Image: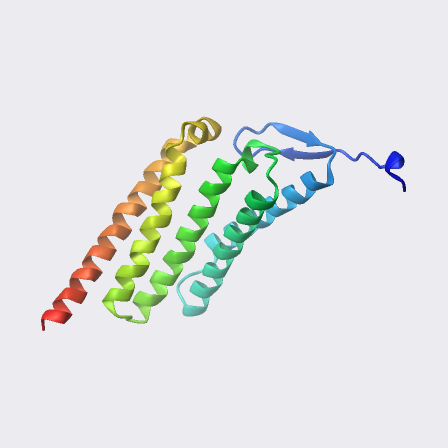
Length: 182
């Protein structure tokens, strides 16, 4: 088919936070929707996997990393924000939440394996950094207006995780200091 005979196929996406239907006649839009769904699927799989075994922790970590990768690719290669869900602010929030959860899996595995306390402290600190970035995204007025009512709940949860993992990092760093003193 020539350019004058291009088929204009409407692609409809229902926004997660508003429930509003958004329609575009653009193949790039369909690609963006597919990428977002891949990220969402990996996020869901990472969250629902059982992390009680070493293998479960690895699988969950991989799913969260894949989700972050899909959202990062979407943010970096689709500069046109097709919908609220695909805005740079929401994608940055999703990326940092996924990377934080992936690091949580790594931390759990490190603690299960009785890794040295300095390593546990370092991984915990990285979890805190990712969640601080997510919290900054949640504090952004544009993100807050996009997310609506759930923004406050998410912010509380992310702040709780920041405090918890900062405490883990602190306790682990103290363990390192105690070992060095003995």
